[in-house]
Length: 398
Image 1 (tube, one colour):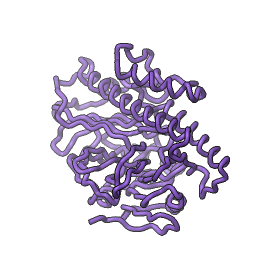
Image 2: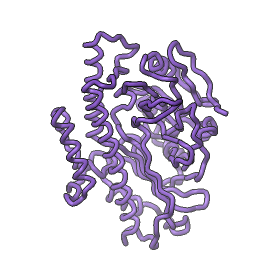
Image 3: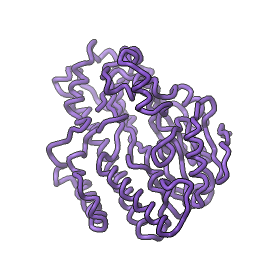
Image 4: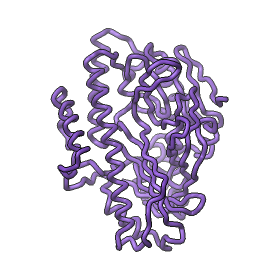
């Protein structure tokens, strides 16, 4: 039985898994605008971490028939999570975690850092991806102004992170959050503007111009689907390379950890993406903006904020949610508001016992800026079951 509540709508139904979780009015209105689009079918699903977003609502699952909405995917295309279990336990970790944090920070470029070398030319997967990206550039040369190679294997900033965690058995996990970096941002921004221009040329009125869409069969639809699919592959590869770097850093002599192996459980999942899926007997384009696919048996990751718990989950295949769950705790306030409201001392208290940055430049990511992860998990108990509960001991941010 589904545990959703309905948000009043003049368009398609809006089914929200938000019981016990606050939803600001701005996000509700953004969802109502989304539900008015004629291409949305049969309803919009809302996850408990929902909050107002740029272009479209974060924490929304948007099924469309014969169309795709670039802003619903957003500009952090393919952003998602990667987690691996190890044979290490809490007793294998040193009393001070500063050195391990430093080794991870040195191994994974973060903030504005970049790798100095491109992926090796014998990497078949990367060569195939470069060929496909060139096909996109041949049609849209403006997308080629950045360097997608130098950012491959890098974390970025904002809410992207690398963590060392302990589960309920005190087993050590490595976990990270990132996406398609600058190239995904260029693709998203570019096609969002193309969609707006297409709507204006066709004289289509929208409740919000950011919700401009491409109709299937149009040139821009085909080009966008190819480009967004490529960016999603890039994001997956980016996380894989970073996780390899984290594991190698932890296995190096400088990390001063005992020898270890990786466990059987590993998860690498998107939470900003679009895929063709069949629901209610129809093929739809399902866009998850801040949501994870949770079909029966699917493994996913729902991270809390800095200082909060995170969860490895298994999907229950709830069709009302289009087999989805939340992608995290969800913000309760803007980054600017968090910086105005909280101090470095507030942040230090909230992250006590965690080896992480405790300075003014990460106040916007402090735990108090996010919803309580316990309430978020309770609201989606019919969407996923918890497999492992993780608590951070190290958090690296750009």
